[in-house]
Length: 162
Image (cartoon, rainbow, N blue to C red; front, side, top):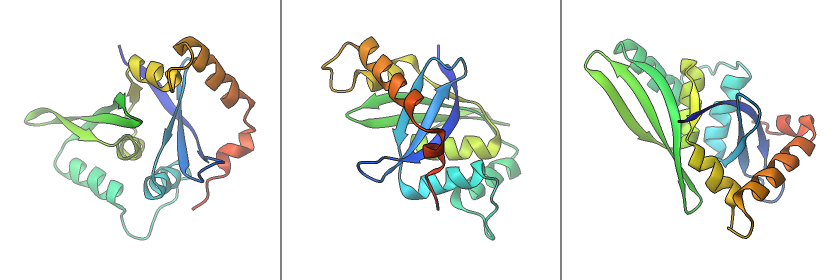
């Protein structure tokens, strides 16, 4: 069963300067970092900070289009991690019935935030992410990752600036 998560933070990878979205399980036991592109990070940061652009951005446009079509985003699910690439699905409810849309997790997250829809992660995604290169047991890597995120200064989560 998929695990409910929230966007816990957005920060820059200190090595690559790439944005990272930090997803944390509702129970606080699991953390999932997802490296995203700068434009997607900007879309997530703008919604997180309640900033309204003068013109709709792509995620705003899609959310408005769905609303106009009387469709609603029920949830987004991060479904898999293969070869360092995350996969997601957007679940939409429409008059014609349920629809699933393949998506990049960053776009799915940005859209879910706009629609105030829940975000879920399949358990195996946490396991694959924690396993990393496979040098350690998944539980050891998960614990190491959790310890690293717990030791990060909360100020680091606000280091992503547009």
